[in-house]
Image (tube, rainbow, N blue to C red; front, top):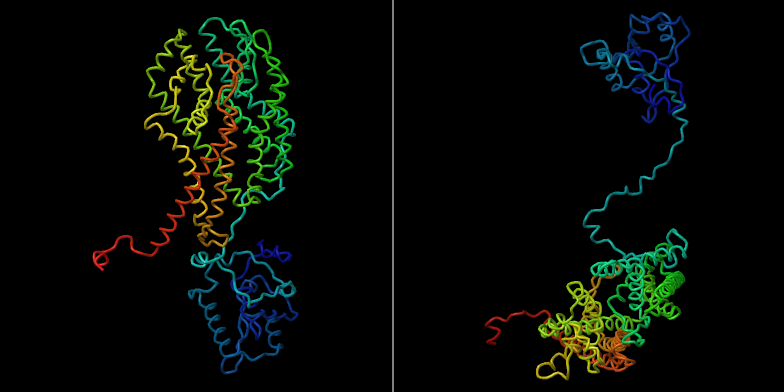
Length: 575
């Protein structure tokens, strides 16, 4: 049974096929050649025998002379039917084809169907031509062009569009865990990643001295973590209680980074990643800040005890603020809110904020380099101060680690010193920590004044980068490369905005780097905040304007030399 019979819905008739059987229905066609001719009906008569059925059928053909030729092997009934049937004239070409077919059937060696045993044993299916004619047909529009694959040259000249990155505003991903659960898990994991290394270092240091007091070690770790968030800790010093507020900014930065990652993971759990939803950003920030504040209160309650006094509500307040800051950065970036707000912000303000952040970071980098240079130049004194502590190898390693943890504080102080306001150290150098070997004892002398130019160069570099980014050729949505026209007044406005932003960031860094120490009494250690803000904004503004002026001069020089040869020949020089 074949697939054709099943598709037509005709019950197949399985029997051995005689050679050449069933060919007339497809070889003889109507006059238009579009549909096979209907099969001829046999006259009533005796049924043919098996021998007659197996013999090849030969229909009477009209010879060119017009005489009818009959087969001698035909049965009497068939002969009578053929003689009673009226004959129709056959075209000469059809008669010639029929004669060739009869010759092929008569000659076994002529390559016809009789000498192929495979064809003689195939199953055949009876096809109802009336059912074929009744099948539904579809009109094909031949006037329409046939689709084809575009060529490479055509693809290169096709219009292109720039698809927006991220999800449309307000479109959310599938939600994960509920918001309180997600905030609790992610913020708790961030807390463990900060407390874990501190616990290992504390236990290792206590084990080097003798037996480990796990309760005291946990209190020390929690107090260091609280101090990293600026929480005041009261400790007894020389029989008196002293307050310590100087936060190690390295530990603060590490904690903020982990809270930032907690905000990112909380946004993903809400399904708001890349959605640009301000509502989900606010909810995620509040959830992370609330959970982090609870952790701060719990840490203060556990650390408070004999020898260490911490106020729980003060710890909760500091943790909520820092948790909101760190969590907001992660939530806004992961949720696509920063990108959404940046697109709606004027270009002057957007470029100014970006350039101000870069300028503030460059100024702080200059301060860090100045600290490293000062310690390296006074390496002998630093080594002598470190050897003065009879604490063994582990004690010296702890002092070195303490200097590194407070390294960002010293970088801010050095930046304030190079900007002009300086900083108040009080009696802190008397602690003889190795890092204080490079603290200057007076104003800069000789070529040291050249170091004060470095913050100015930071503002110049930030403005040059801003102008270069604004004048960089860009690709449009249609794929064309466009070179924007310079707008120098707008760049100057962005420079002034960058000065304000840089001054605010430097003031925040100056406030965070200072504090009260038990050895300095009630005097606050560190730079004066408003002086750093004013001088930082002034230096960045001057450096930024110089950078914009330099970019304008370079751009004008390139515009004048555009299209001219870079090197003149000898004839051109003579002329």
